[in-house]
Amino acid sequence: MNYPGMERVLNITSRIESLREVEKMVDEISIACSMSSEVYGNVMIATLEAANNAILHGNKLDENKDVNIEFRWDENKLELVVTDQGKGFNYKDIPDPTAPGNVEKVNGRGVFLMEKLSDGINFMENGSKVSLTFNL
Image (cartoon, rainbow, N blue to C red; front, side, top):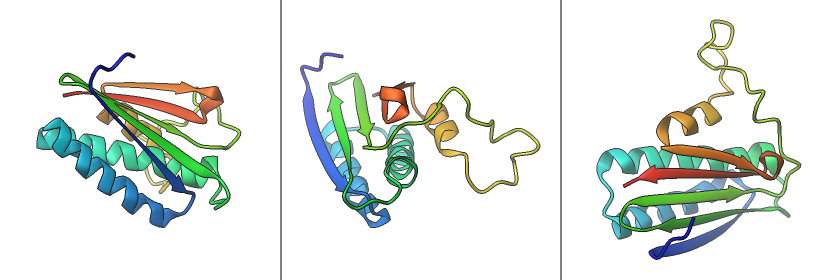
């Protein structure tokens, strides 16, 4: 996607504490994009889910591995791409968290939330990279 607008990149260490940096970046970008409170909430939750998945599942909390988050936007759309240094995963075979046998489970909602909150989701590089788009 070609963005004549703005771009920001954030590299974080694979630690749960690094999610604070992600929150701060989303706050800064929400101001730069003049996003509505509804879009802001969706972007914040989906971005944190993607970053958390990259830290926990992709990089397995290995502090020698980074998570890269690219934000690109113009007046109409925000795209963010989260990349980890893991082996990826089978994103086509994720259990439905709303299925009766999965409702009580604590884990397994991240991708579901990202799909529901974004206007577009695309996995690349065997699942170690995810692109989320949001209409502004």
